[in-house]
Length: 169
Image 1: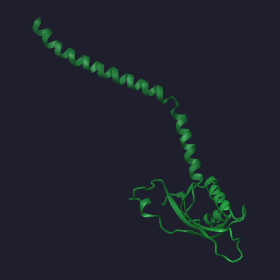
Image 2 (image 1 turned 180 degrees about the vertical axis):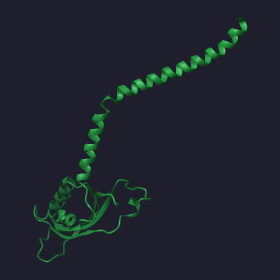
Image 3 (image 1 turned 90 degrees about the vertical axis):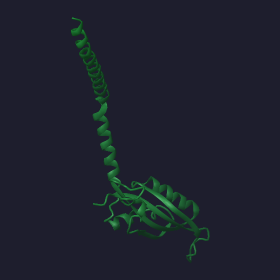
Image 4 (image 1 turned 120 degrees about the horizontal axis):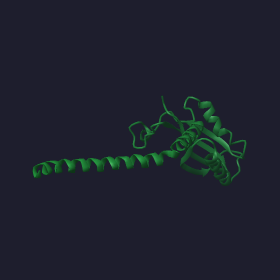
């Protein structure tokens, strides 16, 4: 009888460990089921956010539409766009193997030159940030406007504007 108990005790230890593992898995599954109750609402919210972002993207092939976006700001204030140039290539850092690579989207860079007084230029930058497309301004430089017939207080602003765009297919 003692031998049978000794042989069975090893089996009892293994079965006890298996039972503990099974109970832990059941508890984890139960917790996951409780936490997943709002998951479908979260997925719907995220899909809505993605649709909102995609509606605000530029299309690299629509150069005229993209350029017109900037010129619309002339009618709203006393500024004059001198240059709006869409750059042909994406910089290396945003390319597929770059450190800031964009996996789902791309970026379009614009060199923009605009003339206006200091307040108007700041208002333009604020309006650009509040506009529909997702963009950021970099390389902001100011100099005295030398165009004939312009107010002496007018400045020439040179900016690089980065706009989030549809991914390159």
